[in-house]
Image (tube, rainbow, N blue to C red; front, side):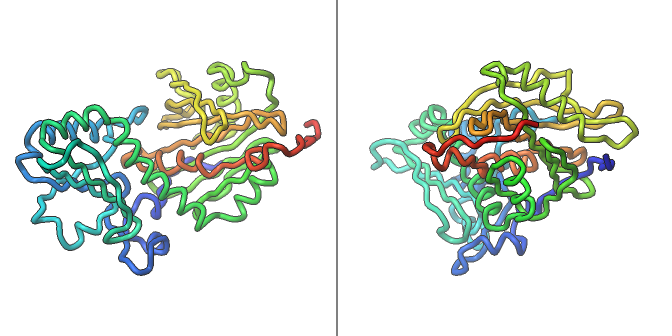
Length: 344
């Protein structure tokens, strides 16, 4: 198999702000939003920022993202005063306004979209007192992070749908019977009967994923051990930079395992770190596996990042969000007859 060295991947449209391709996503009547993914402008006065409320916001929104090689916060926060909330700042992609209003009966968060630019999310956190707002943020920390992360995820998915790599999408459809949207710039690196390796390569990072399937043998097929064995079997098809080297799952950290439903479909997730056997490379990965009941097979989408010099958060989010573009024919029509698949 042709050797392809794992290099770097940076999707400018997903990680950068204000590039030409990204502007085509915006409402033409409004300017393109400013800033990078996972940046958040917090609008509040200095007293609130230096007090208990500011401490709580920072502790919640700067919580480290799990399973990255280095500690990186969920969001990069930048505080501005109401007087400083002008010009290009009002056009930032993510804004959180803090409003203390004694007339408010209770604390709450309201969300508005594309007010001064597009795409843009403006959250207003309002409550009767600093104490009430602090308690609200503490009690709703997970919901607040989810809301902001979902906003970024939806942008990634929207871009992939609008500016897809159509040839790769057709290849995935033919090989796996799965609809999936992939942003332009990703390239096919390797192909097998039950395997595809696709990545977006730049000189200093790599953002990629591989898809594979194998026969479903009952509930045990989605157990942590079975998923890990399958991952290592298929990851070995991804060569490293030196002769005989290949990707594998790091044995230094046990992957995290969970099961969840996405639009009714059951998925099993493994999240951890990968290494290269026979060489010195590694990074974070997340794999998502589900049962394609029509085909009688386990289908896996495995996303990884290699970025030794740059942060990994945005790269990782950018590729793992592609899970939300995957659709099976059985999901579109639950009543359709099972598809007969020839034995391999």
